[in-house]
Amino acid sequence: MINSLYPMTTETATSPTATSEQPRGLSADPVISVRDLETHFFTDEGVVRAVDGVNFDVHPGTTMGIVGESGCGKSITAKSILQIVEAPGRIVNGEIQYRRDAGSGETVNLLNYGANSESMRSIRGGEISMIFQEPMTSFSSLHTFGNQIDEALRLHTNLSKNERFELGVDWLARVGIPNPTQRMHEYPFRFSGGQLQRAMIAMAMCTNPKVLIADEPTTALDVTTQAQILDLLQRMQEENDMAIVFITHDLGVIAEIADEVTVMYLGKVVESGPVHNFFDDPMHPYSRALLTSIPSMFTLSRERLPSISGSIPHPQNRPSGCAFHPRCQSYIEGTCNIREPELVSVNEDQDVSCFLYEDQ
Image 1 (tube, rainbow, N blue to C red):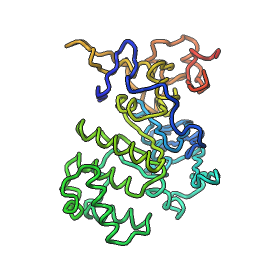
Image 2: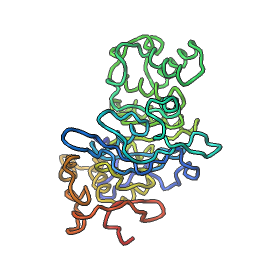
Image 3: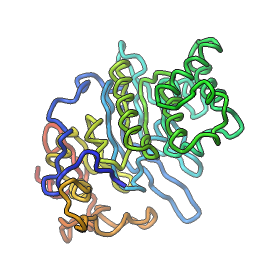
Image 4: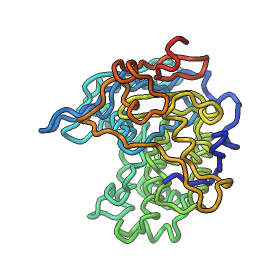
């Protein structure tokens, strides 16, 4: 459900927090460049193209917001970067260029490392961390939280045991968990859902990663704690020049925290560009539909909210042509249902995959 913390009118589909300033850090080389990424699931019923040719860049000190309905491939894209896609999923094509040394500018293709290689394990959880969407299933029930955060720090830092414990306590306090020293000795089942979410954030951030992938990091949190966590992420970003890939359904949060926005639909990128362009001038019909479906402070009592017609097609029964055309109000007969649009630049900042801009 999309929160209306940062209300928008359905008429203008703009956000007061999405400014027209140049996103910070975009002059620097990207720390991660995803090119033609394809991740498929090979099931008994057929092949599911969960990620189908995704491209985007993430720059140091900036936040890339990835939005779209459930089932669009956002989480699988994030897991593909860290090579933690569960079987029967497999990355079948693409490159994930990662710049480890900001000074040299040299990049490495993460897909050249094996998922269980020493190089990949040193990057995963250390240089690139992830906040998972389901914290209740992400912690081991057999070990205390202190043991689990200590393992992350032991693998990726040179701190002593006492220093690791003190740092774990400090991070629990930073994310707002009371009695942090005592909670270090407790098992995850003693934490509430919201506390587990905050503990997951603490464990991801404790290694000071260069890139943080946050998959719905504030879903289980109340509004006050959500604001505190977003402030914490932004402070860490400023202190460490950290890049963030922020996956969420909440466009209000995107307006608050993101610099760039990538809109995904059925495994593909349909629009990408600066956050202010996304809110002020959305170009793809799917982007416009997402924005107009958000409740705002101007919505009248008992007024029916606009919604996107239809539902996401089953991944094994993809429509021909443009995947969005069965739900699109700008559908062009004889074009959208036959041909598949490509992602093209329509101005200096925005890319869009739609036949409405084919001439441009």
